Length: 70
Image 1 (cartoon, rainbow, N blue to C red):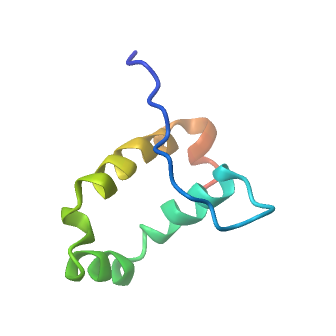
Image 2 (cartoon, rainbow, N blue to C red):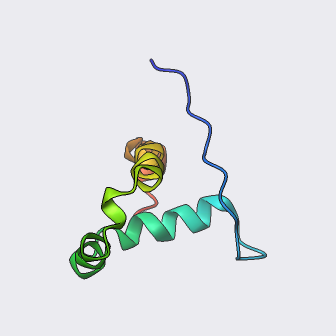
């Protein structure tokens, strides 16, 4: 198994919420085709930093995390 990646350093502007809660909400947003279209139109999907963050979020595929997705 590959070594665990460290999460990228990002500012968190949501006091009182855990990183897990913030990432859960973001992963759920990625399921919205309108949001994905917006990201594509604004060229966010071409940003290497964004794509690295999405790669980091692959841990949501693990069953222990995937069951939190609705």
